[in-house]
Image (cartoon, rainbow, N blue to C red):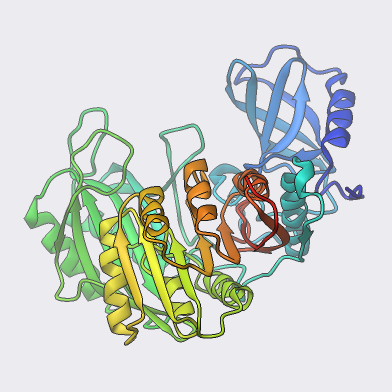
Length: 485
């Protein structure tokens, strides 16, 4: 691993050496929420916090960038870790932008890299992927390509799931601050699509004007809990979902009418009822306030219907980059059978359909499978079949039926694939696999197991699905070797 002169990414031994040096600095041995101290930032952790140290307390500093000295306040102290925030920048990092797109990012903490110049973000993310792969000697020969960036680095986020708090006279609509139940009120967020920001402002005014009671989780009184907004860039239309503690038709009817009067671009409005005490946003029941129940988005040549519960990438440009990379590396000739595991609403499966003999999509969420089938009909695609169920069990059925599968696409959630799933997929003996991952750590873990199962990864393509944040997607190409488990 080459040393990065600006500290964008560091090999484990280098990071440990610098951490030991900084830990000897003359700083208080015990920290409290009243502590103010000066520290140096030497790296970023996987959550985008600046890493420093203070006595025996590991410090994570919101808003700090590698290579700078900062004065920080402490906002939370745990047993083995403390969290702080930048009060003043004493010596700025060469990575820091002189004109950051957001002035409140240190307090919001929703996009921790937004103060970093974008070209340095790209290099840091690529190094982050390389560092994850370097944890396993079996993966040392993988070529990590330069990061692919979407057309927009700002105002790209077309889906927002936001908490509502406070009182109806001054409602707060935003995100929970880290390790807290406090809602940071969002105004004109630079990551949100501009129509999302307009919807948030209109809903905020509507709650106040119509005196819609806001839910209080302590007293369990009130109505409005969450707000979900989705935008179709293809249609330039919006969907609004009010998540409420109970049905309460009257308030939502009038609020929906107000929003549509103020914003004609809002074509779909639904009320979702969630009476649970947990942190899950959506409840089991939807009640539509409009005749339309979905939006239609377009990625390349494929149209996709988006409903309130559909999983769909929040960055349309980033999704197109991933779909195109998967299609290129699949190398289809029209004769292959493709398996798309964790297929969601069918975006990748339908993109590959024109080049394959047949495509099979498996997904555990039944509503997503219903959406995938509808999307196949919408696009006039007849060589795709979608099934709902446990991934490992469905793949085992293919193995038992001796069904030939030539190419497998894996697109699991952040936790990666269960070992049982990977072993079942390897038993199908496809000639090629494409692994789409949103976690470099679980990707590296799974690539190591697949290497043992006879599938070698030579190339990984990072894709910046979420500019200004620490998240990164990857597409990995695996080919069948002569090895066996």
